[in-house]
Image (cartoon, rainbow, N blue to C red; front, side):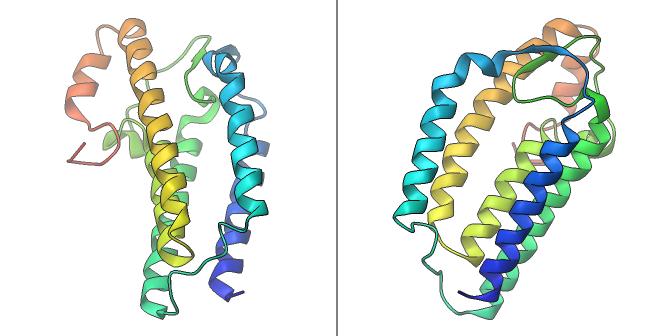
Length: 181
């Protein structure tokens, strides 16, 4: 096992430990994700199956530059997701959740991207693919599809909840990639 595998593995573990701990104290509301209980079960089964067949243990290569670029993307992605999560504060919730007394956050990373948490996680997964194994690209594509769907659902909710301010915000910022998409 290469040291980059260990560094990225520990990075993911620390990130998810922080993410779960930060979930306490968020505003109450309705979680539309509960309708996707079957999808969560399928996700867990697929991840366990992939781990059992050691799908995440192939290596892209032994190129130190490629590993360094992947590590940089990984760190940048997690940093963006954490910055966005911290900036949302108690407004944060699981994908497609509807908060009681929500606030439209348009500052910090939300100044450039409407969904910086999703963008950061996708970037971290792409970085993992570049540094460790291309199998992570499959994970990034699947997560990207889910995040794209979640962003559209959340966009509809925010447009209905903030009819005066959200349309202008939506028109001035991109959904996932600054200045592009």
